[in-house]
Length: 598
Image (cartoon, rainbow, N blue to C red; front, side, top):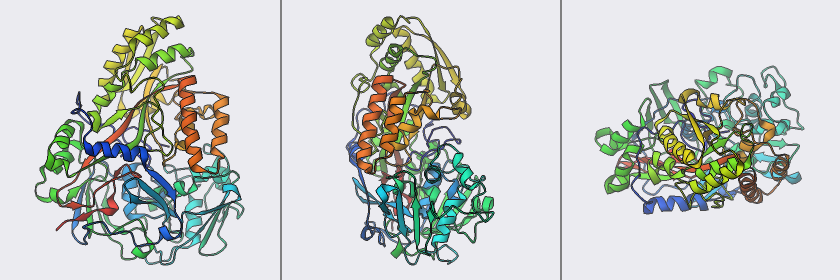
């Protein structure tokens, strides 16, 4: 799951950098319309396709990057230090970017062209072979795959990797595969193997089977059409059975990617050097160009932007994996041709929503009035204009398979809100003048938006009471079922390019509890039955279309939340950094293609 806060964010690996939503400073306009480069990014976001690849597409080495050369050191400027290095504890995007360099799992993503990606076999020979209608998936391991100590990766390591995610000390990573294997929701999966593999117990062969050193077979009670996506998450990267040090593994993991950790000083720095045990012939997705990456932590977005824009000295060979251009600098980056050519931009998978507390606001016309009144343009402007976001018409990000540009409440057609229509609906509801408690985060962007939103809502006839909440505790506060607020925003991103990790998380009434992502407390058995039907579909592409249809039905019929904007990002690098592109899977710059120019 993926929600946005500062460091407590469980931001998805297919999503935005942890905390990257809090761009300091703001811009009222953002410099007008999209540039040609951003228009291209927009089309990539909406039209990009994903396929599950066969054995041929999964064979290494990776395609050479044009101009790519070996040698040199890249300086990496990062705001946040890495809290976790153990793959099973990795869920936020800054750690996910690091994971592309040091960890490998059964599957991963490979860019084929600007609008085409494949889920390929990484340690496995292909993206998986399904049988029994998608209830059984079989993987075979490649030859020549090793840990950094030279030991061969076997099916026992993969089994151990999955089983250890059931252990109580693994608390931060994804839980999809555990829940699927146990056929249960929440944390009940832990009962299946409560101590993980550490006391000699294992998952039965009827659930997870390793008939030989090269073969892994997953058995599920229900079809799991999206297993290749889930296995590509950093959280399921392989961990050595023999060298597993449990909690200590989080500080010193055994690496399998093209780089390994030479040193790590939490909050200060990290150095990555080449991993000689990584064999490019086994890897169809990664390159190994620089000799090293020197990562510096504690560099704010403003500072990294200034350094990289200056392009002076060592900044020429510097970049950032996840720091974005701060909103106050977007105008210059987008209009200065010398800086612009060193930038990459595109969609992130996050969508912002204004939740309507359905326990407190039961009248549908009141909810419709709120939906029409909100000025979506104000939040786009607060995030730096079109470089930092785009108006949202529905719940589904343009980065997801099956997304359609629907706009049932006219949020794109009338970006400043339709106060007249809102006032009419509120009057018809008989609730004109009703008190509306509006909670928002005290970050600059949301404070600015709150002023414009409250103004529109007041004009529509609401008695608005604003409540600003400290950013660090915001999600804890709105996550309480009895939170005392009527409307409050959140942002959510998918864990892979499917709305299966969006719609149920946000709108399944069976998941309502403190801390749940169903912030609007939406309950509708009709739609929950539909969620179960779509989840059981064996065709992932058809399921993607159905998720979009269901999301629109929920929006139109129940109005539990109002879609506001789709997040976008701009990142820049020094002039001697080559191979930089905005990756549609990471929704950030891809570290594995970078090289130092001569």
